[in-house]
Length: 163
Image (cartoon, rainbow, N blue to C red; front, side, top):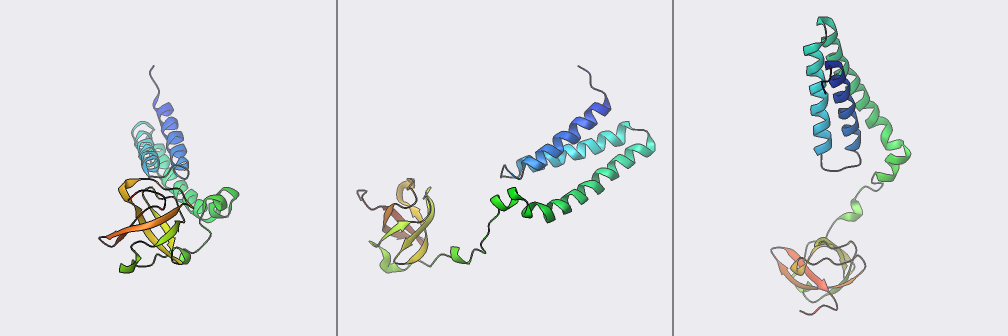
């Protein structure tokens, strides 16, 4: 199947736009980078195959409308229903972790987040960044006990687990 340059141009524009939009829902940056490269490829196809003024106009249009779309996205998406559902609503001040103290070995607490194997535990009324010993996963809400402090990290295991 032999596609015309116009078909390639439209396909790369559509794929680039869809991948950039998908980047919002698929973390990691790969989809956005590939989408950006597809948009650059569409600009190249437009410059190479469209008649002299139209190739340049298509490339400039992609840059200008892409910039406008980005600005509108940054301004409007956080206020949309989907944006409100996936955005963080607190300032993060409550997420601070206390520094581990030497006397914590043997102290009991509760896993605030799932420990996979790292997470946050509430020990003695303070939030600590902790690591589950042995790389095991511990569910949020499980009772934990500090087994050691190694390299400034609190190592914990489930309270009922054997040492």
